Image 1 (cartoon, rainbow, N blue to C red):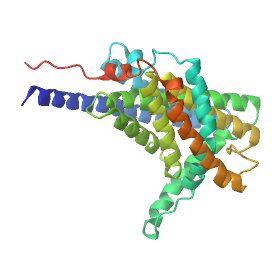
Image 2: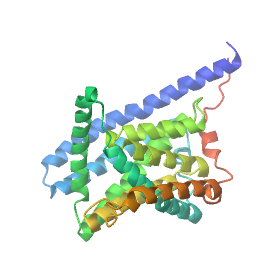
Image 3: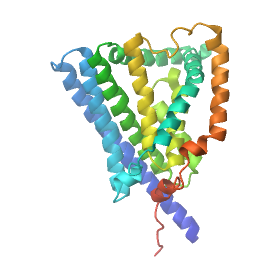
Image 4: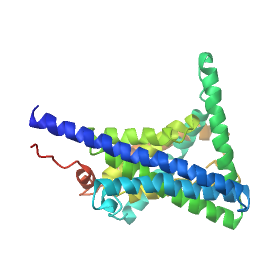
Length: 309
């Protein structure tokens, strides 16, 4: 075996071990959070929404934050640096994320609507029904969490669904999983999209799969472009937080409540949104998201060379 083949084999084995650490910790912590969730459900902790919020807090901390930190500690003596948390977000990056969010809103709204109305062939009608049952069960919990128009209801929703969930999921899927994949033989773009696919799949909501896939990819590119996890965290928090606020104030999750049934929202706005979004990434992406050290996080995540003995 050549030195290059030997090193490639060592990298592959190390990546497999890291994957086992991440997802092994995830499943153990998920079981533990489920058990704690059962205790919360049977306890006297206020309304059903309050219980769901506490369950979400436990799940985010145990099933997402803890495995990511354990993986980072396993891989590096500087876990915060390894996860991409050391480099702060800049005002320019914050502005860029907000601009992207505004520009892509109509196109994403159209994609969400399209994804929700996908129908399987008749031969797979039973599979579609099972998936829709999963979706309805998940939506029932989401609606319960979002069904509060009081000040505290909106604030608690933003804190848990927006900030904590946004931070936890980015820590796990981008900081942990994407960072782990970057140490393998995969190219960086593949790492971004694989992480996005896993991110969307693990929500177990097929009829929201494609919008979540694109969001996950955008979060992954933010990490790659900037070398910091914070822009992705901010983008995730912005998305979740606005959903909570809009649902609380308007009683629905549509960004365009007054024009949702109009032709302009169905055709012109999505096309214009897509066109402007492409122009932004072509001409302004480097200005808002480029970093001279944007590859540093990938270099730090690389498996160090192993000297053959």
